[in-house]
Amino acid sequence: MKRALLPSNLTIIFYSFICLINPIDLEAQGFEDRIINAFKQTEINLAKGYLNSDPVTITDAYCDRSAGGINDFYSEGDYWWPDPNNPGGPYYQRDGQTNPENFTAHRHAMIRLSEITATLTSAWLLTKDEAYLEKALEHLNAWFVNPSTKMNPHLLYAQAIYGKVTGRGIGLIDAYHLVEVAQSVKVLEDKGGISAEDAEQIKSWFSEFLNWMTTHEYGISEMNWKNNHGTCWAATASSMAVLTENDEVIKLCVDRFKNILLPNQMANDGSFPLELKRTKPYGYSLFNIDAFFNLAKILHTPEVNLFEYETNDGKSIKKGLEFIYPYIKEKSEWPYEKDIFIWEEWPVCHPALLFGALAYGNLNYLELYLKLPKYPSHSELIRNLPVRHPLIWILK
Image 1 (cartoon, rainbow, N blue to C red):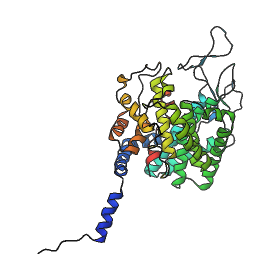
Image 2: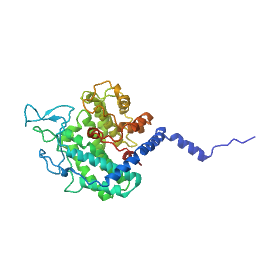
Image 3: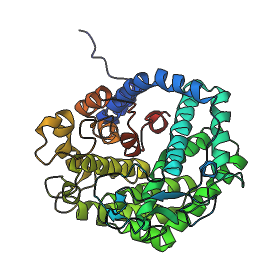
Image 4: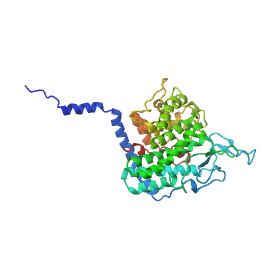
């Protein structure tokens, strides 16, 4: 009679290990490989072009209407226009309609910085070519280290309104495009791409800006804004807090996610009523769910998993994505008003789909993410999509 074969200790250990693996982790790894393959060649090609790009900072353009100096960021409220009944008088508001004559050079320069830095960082992660690293550092130093070209670490003069105010708290949303800059610096430092000295000089600027946006009345006002502005404040602050290891602000952002942002902004069906009331309800709904997922990704640790957080009455960003997903997949089924501007251009490659696919192991989210336009060209789409480079978020 044959003897029964007993499993060896090694076999037992192996099968025990397999049982401990989270299936979502295995799926996420396969998802990440698909995302990397979908983006890598284009990111490298774009980065090659950026090797010839010179830094453009806010000192390269100045608006006479700014109350600040040459190193001070300046922008003007999007939806504010000259009053035809009072030429030369204070501007008046036309919600959802951007005034094309407003000063936007500083905002475009910051978006350009984000685009170039994240692309160069992605290319360096893929190739380890030092040329990408050196060019990224050149842009970072120009913006945050060099006294003659750097931006002062505040937004005192953002979203000004002619004839009314020299700056506003809601101007903090312009800094949302620093999220991928902060992530790029973090990745470059973590991977040993930049020296400790270079990293500290750059991080010093982010630390100063973070202190300003958490203590100045403009920053506090924006933090307490009840719609997407409050979400974007938290995403921006958390990105800088993680980079500079500011545990106090990290805890603040986690708390606001759980106890302020999610319960106060989301309806029980997963929608955002305050965004649905706007003249661009579809775009703002997408923008806000993206901001929530960006925030969850930035703050994610083994101990903090906001992707799975649920309020006592059942609200969660998982539910929020479930609500909007059918309308990303088929916009024609959107049951609310159409946006008055750039309705046709949405949707694009939304980070909520990216991070949702990875967090929940959801293949439908991944397939839709990879299917949608990856590199939008419309300036308003780019402005409302500050997280556009998945490789700096997923490459280990």
